[in-house]
Amino acid sequence: MPGETDRRIIAELAARGYNADREAVTLLASASDPERALDRAVEAAPPDAFKITGDHLREVVEGDTRDSPRTPTTTPNPDPPVSDAEGSDSVADGGAVTPVETKDRGDDSVPTTNEPGGDGERVPTDPEERLVDILGDITGQSTGTGEYSEFVTVFRDRYERLAGKLRGRVNHRPADAIQSMPGGSDAEMIGMVNDIRSTASGHWLIELEDTTGVFPCLVMKDREIADLVNELVYDEVIAVRGTLADDAGILFTDEIFFPDVPHTHKPNTADRHVQAALISDVHVGSQEFAADAWSRFADWLHTAEAQDVEYLLLAGDMVEGVGIYPNQDEELDIVDIYEQYEAFAEYLKEVPGDLEIVMIPGNHDAVRLAEPQPAFDEELRGIMSAHDARITGNPSTVTIEDVSVLMYHGMSLDEMIADLPEEKASYDNPEKAMYHLLKKRHVAPKYGGKMRIAPEERDYLVIDEVPDVFHTGHVHKLGFGTYNNVTAINSGCWQEQTEFQRSVNIDPDVGYAPIVDLDTLDVTARKFT
Image (cartoon, rainbow, N blue to C red; front, side, top):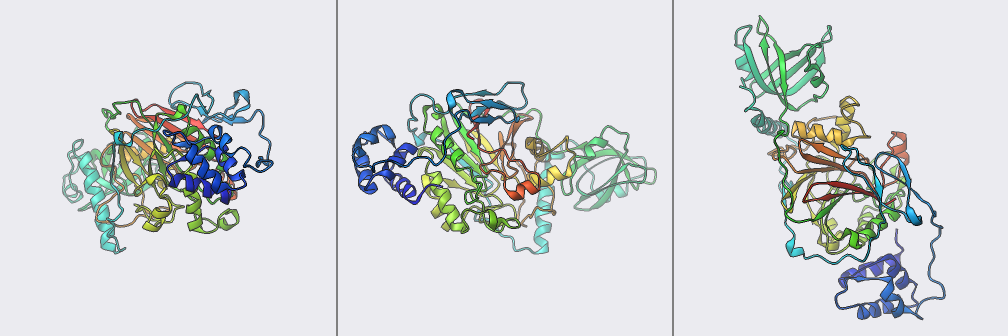
């Protein structure tokens, strides 16, 4: 992380309304009197400047620096390899570390490399042009005390809201009404998955529960819909259609329906060319935090090439946290949680001050672990006040330039990947697990396991409105694609592989920043390692 002098310089410049490139910070820190040099640099800055650069600073501090400025402790590799999202290697031209641009994984385009800088510097944009709205934030709305009745309330709310999305597709009969129907009757039911088990003959028995009771539904192993049973998880809401057995004690199921995203969904787009950078899992405080990659990302944002990036959306895990997994303390660079957030705030100051920043918490952050997670408390907000970032809960829907972005950290992705067949969801393709959450219209459908769900008056985890973009993190893998015209992005991380990750066979995708063109919803993944 930056030295104390560097941090003071960055903080002081930010307080005066300036950013600085890395060369400028190095020159200021190398001056015999850094504070005096900083004052002179600000006085000499052009009237319209927003960033102190090494070029116009060099004359100001000439003769005021030590005999030899600080030099890097390592020699850069003249031909550093970079990896794209598919794991193939390429070499940067001219010896510079370059981000890799990777189009949507759903197409056959070939990754290309571009110089990270571009010509010229970023010109500050007018924040008055920004259009930002936040919905679904639990912050300040939590009422749960953990009483049993509150769990009943939240699951009843889930059922009613998701059942409403299915009633147009089936003629729902309550469980108690179906029980009184004669054998051989056609029946349709909407219910929450209460149990899934196989019979001695290899068929599937699904117990569906509604507000009146439970009814068993049998899916024969030789039916096409048997493959859909592999997609089911406990506590999700589905609909079925079939025929009652002769004794009316079971429903032979012919069709299964999910709340799903309509195939006719048409996403909103911005009416001007503007971009958003979507990142997550920064993990400042870890010994494996990729500080160099972060600085290259921040430096790139200051260039003309990143001129159209006006929004930065962070989907949780700003810091490494404390006590998250066994023996984590042995892998911490910063052991105090508040100092971790202070360090994160310093790194956040490296990005341009004209960016509109939105942040939600994750499971490593200092908020409650149960979802939905309220936003950071006032003390942490005060620490992370750089650039006046908007801080909201997990999950939240953030609308920017008329494009709705569902931001969810992604704890439930672990459950989905564990429960679904590998071809349907895996850590190597996290976007596929996201597709299933969209299909179920719920970001965390399964209760129990590793997931902790807080009982509230309503289920904040239901996906009421179809988003245009679905943004998650948590699994430290890069993946993106489209599902029924919804752009799904898992944005990788900024933390190299830890011992714990190695023990559970997680190979992270480090230093990626997916960039979304809000006017077209095209995605480009840029790599900074």
